[in-house]
Image (cartoon, rainbow, N blue to C red; front, side, top):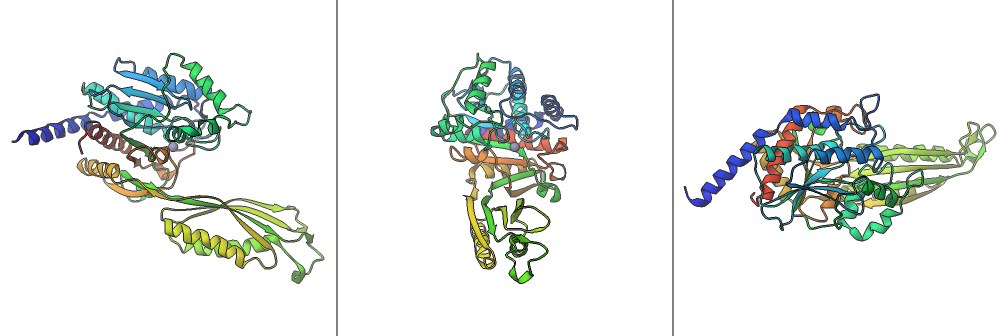
Length: 429
Ligand SMILES: [Zn+2]
């Protein structure tokens, strides 16, 4: 056997040792321990970003890394970094992580799984007394959920684009507390932890997450290889007719904003339904004025949330919203205002390929899929090669106190994460 072949064989042995040494029960126990912080009566978690409960859960996480080769850092937006020494300390770290904040009636796994899968990988490397060449970092991103401070993915967005810090700092919650004040409070709770600049160089980022949808479960796949994040176009449709008496106004004289809205929506649902499963069309907010049962509505406002993983389909379908709004502007005026157009993107192949290879080698059935939800990885994608590992969640239910996942799937995702992190930190593929 030549020298390079021996090295490859040696490396493969180590990768096998690491993936076999992941302890699923220890992972599960850490998830259940974290779920005690902000536990709700219905078995969920309520842990809003940068609250006392959120700060306490981070302190507990840090206590679990009480070994001399771990170092903690915070930054100006409230992200927390746990660095594991590498043999080559000056090289850029390989990063993993997610978030520990939840929705007001959230579950035990969304975000938390990604952080604690990283914890389990680091613990396994400690068990085996293995050190990587590059340092590894576990990151807890601040305010991913975006419910206390809008919008979400704030910590990772600010990490990727530090120049936006002043813009984020002035955002306030419902009690008029600013992000800057909440972060200062977080810093006070961990006054010993050194500060680090935003946006340090990162070699690669991998985030493990529950799918938050039913695709993996329905296709009996254990590992989701996330190809990218779908794009979205948001519209606000305003229909203006004329208020009139419900009893005295003949049909031919009416300018009924509700009727126009219904006819427009009928056409829109028909177009979107025939665009296939990948098209996500939602009208979730609808207002009618004056909202009185004996008045012909003079005014209707509703919002459209349209998402699709293909740029050309998103363009065509979004344009259809504008086209059909024009078509129905006869008895009432329709104004279609576009609020947001975020293009879909695909992760560069490097990390998804590593995830695919690890899943195949470990014989975990896998499926390539785009993410329907946004994640911190969207922002890290701007900094370094990035990828995401999805695992199924029960019934695809998430952002719900009933959110659940199978231990076997969580274990499989952590094994894949371990292999990819180790290969990247050892500069092998
Ligand atoms: Zn999440």
